[in-house]
Image 1 (cartoon, rainbow, N blue to C red):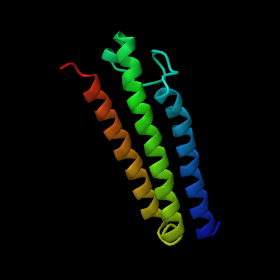
Image 2 (cartoon, one colour):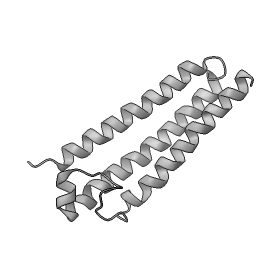
Image 3 (tube, rainbow, N blue to C red):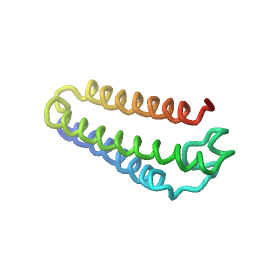
Image 4 (tube, rainbow, N blue to C red):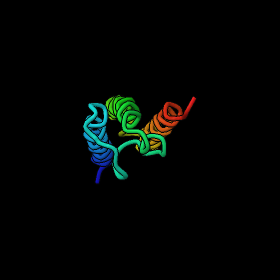
Length: 116
């Protein structure tokens, strides 16, 4: 496969991940995910209090959707500029943005759900 083809394949895989993340985030944001042990922002405080569950999941869902959109735009910018020549660097930048975003959203959710 050519470098150009590999760059497009990588971008498409990232975009598919962004769509999956957005599809998971929207019901959380809209309060459609009831408290459960498989989907949503699950910590002891949110599982114990349904009102807190919906409030925290609305914020986390909104933030995950924003992350998915921002990441898709970053991948598009990388694809248009440097991904064809520097695929590994572009993939690392993209994965780093996602990783940092997920960590920040997780931290924010924990912060919101902690008492005090």
